[in-house]
Structure formats: C-alpha cells, structure tokens
Amino acid sequence: MQPQMHYATWAEVDLGAIAGNVRFFRKTTQRAVMAVVKANAYGHGAAPVARAALEAGASWLAVARAGEALELREAGLAAPILILGYTSPARWMELIRAGVSLTVWSEAQIVEMAAAGRQAGKPAHLHLKVDTGMSRLGTEPEQAPLLAEKIRKLEGVLFEGIFTHFARADEADPAPTDAQSTRFRKVVEALEHAGMRPPWVHASNSAGTLRRPEAWYDLVRVGIAMYGLEPSRACPLPETIRPALAWKSSLAMVKTLPPGRGISYGHVYTTTRDERIGTIPVGYADGFRRIEGNVVLVRGRRVPVIGRVTMDQIMVQLDGVPEAQVGDVVVLIGRQQEECISAEEVAERWGTINYEVTSGLAARVPRLYIGP
Ligand SMILES: *Cc1c(COP(=O)(O)O)cnc(C)c1O
Image (cartoon, rainbow, N blue to C red):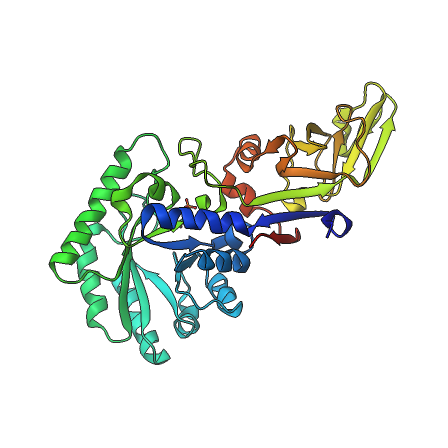
C-alpha cells in the first residue's frame, strides 16, 4: 500500500525495531523486561507495541492509567500489567478482576484495597512504591517494611512487588542516582532479613537499565529506549538500538509564487522573488508544533517550513528541491535517502524532549505497522 494515497499524514511504526530493542535488553540484563507502554506506547500504539514486545521476550507491561490497562486486556493481552501510578478507588474492583497489578504507597490505600480484593473475590496484586528521591509518589524508605508487613497480613491483597524510580539516571553525574540506589537497596535488604522480599523488586527505567546494573534486580522497566529513543543527550543508546517511529505526509500542492506574496496566517513570511512553495497536510492538531524554524525532508533534502504552522497544514520553501512534485512523500521524523530527522532533533527545535514529541502525536494520525 502507498500510504500517501490513503492518508494526509501518518506514522509508520517498525515493530521489528521494537522487538529487536526488547531482545537487546533481555540479553544484556538477563532480567525480565517490563515494556512501558503508557501514553499509547509513547505515541506508537499500545496494543501492537505491547504484543510485539511480549513476543520478543518481555514478560510485563506497564501503563499509567486504568483505561490504558483495560484497553490492553480488551486487545486480548493476558500478560501481567502494572499501573505505575495513581488509580482512582472507583476503578479498583474492575482492575483487580482484570488481573491488573496496582501501585500503593500508604496504609490507608492498602487497607481499602484489601477490602476491594475481598469483595472482588480475588486478591489485589500490589507493588509498594518507595520514594528514594524522585519526590513524586511513594512511601518514605523507613516506612516501607511496616507497609510491607501490613500487605502481607491482610486478606485481599498480595505483596507482589516493591519499586522505586530514578530522577536523574540519565545525567552524567552518577552521585544522585548512587544515593537513590543505596536507599532502595537498604529497603530491599531490610525486607530480605525480615523474610518479606516480594517476587518482583524493580528500580530501573531506560537510563537505569543502560547504566546501573546494580539496580536491575528482578526486572527492568524499559520505556523510551524500547522505542529506540535516547533517554537524554547525556545518555546515548548503543548502536544496535533502532528507532521505531517515522512520521510522514506528502505534498498536496506545489506552486511558484511571485515576489511579495504573504504566506499563511499573519504573513510572517513574504516571498522576495519567484519562489517554489509546497503545501503539506499536517498541522498542530496532528502534534506538529506551532513554532518557527521547523524543517522537513522532501526527496531526501532538508527544506524549511515557512509561515505559521496552521491547524491542519504547513507550507515549505522548495527552492532547494526544484524537482519536487505533488504526491512526493514528506518526512517529518525519520529517514529519507541519506538524510534523517530524529525525534531528538525535533525535540531540540521544540524546546522539549523526545518523549513529548512522540507521545504528543495526535490520535487522528493513523499508525501503520511494519515488521514482524
Ligand atoms: C515512565 C516510567 C518508566 C519508563 O521510563 P523511560 O525513561 O521511558 O524508560 C519507568 N518507570 C516509571 C515509574 C515510569 O513512570
């Protein structure tokens, strides 16, 4: 199929790259891999990515919201799923029944979840979150053994796991992560001494997985790197990791305009001579940021986006590609011939990080899957 004949703009997701990246982390860590597929798999499409990751050897899935977990169950995925953060109590029963593991960090939550588990006729599988320095969610490390004991005592809950999350594992300076890692290790050792160690101890996000073997424990929670995207500029990826996502569109119109023509809203760009201008059907409602200085690829060459980005369309200056024609595929993220625009490059232009670029890809952009 030629996508440009069906869609104005679309994303191509290479499931072979996802699978290869998962296999890389399985092999290098020799630990269970939890594929983090929250936020629609960072924009890549939750169910297809989850399926590819599981087939490649991942054994857990992680999401952020109740709806994301249930969507995976509805897609027929039976693997263990952990909701990494807050879940509204109104959703506990259906999640427990669906066999979705939940994160807790307070005694009140544990007591209420036990009641929900008893009512569901099935114990709630709990992962205790410990705040070792992210200061987002989690119990203080000193409280963790008490909460673990509480979970173990109560009927209706099962102590399945304990985890923490690194705030700075992607930075050059290892000291802040050393401190977090040590705090967490002490908690795990205290549980071991008390005979309360749960089956799943975990700490590492992608950066931790790449850099902190001492924090691999029983499983690694790999998000950004599974998509072939680097955790940060200071935390590059090994060469074998490949990006999975490309974002494309095509030229809808190509014309030569005389000097003095204002282009797009506000006429912030005006032609100064005869100029070749192309119109591309992608805009900020697709997730293409409304800023100056965007660049896209046409026929393997970089061309500047000119004038304002509109809701559904952008214009480009095609003087550098005189042979450009209506119907030519345009690459917003990805490779075309010898040129490549990475999600990281786009993130730099947009003043953000690659995570926000791909997870900001709008729902109306169809995802097409290639690979295994
Ligand atoms: C999102 C998230 C991850 C994955 O982080 P990456 O940097 O994308 O690997 C892991 N653990 C928790 C708790 C998260 O919220």
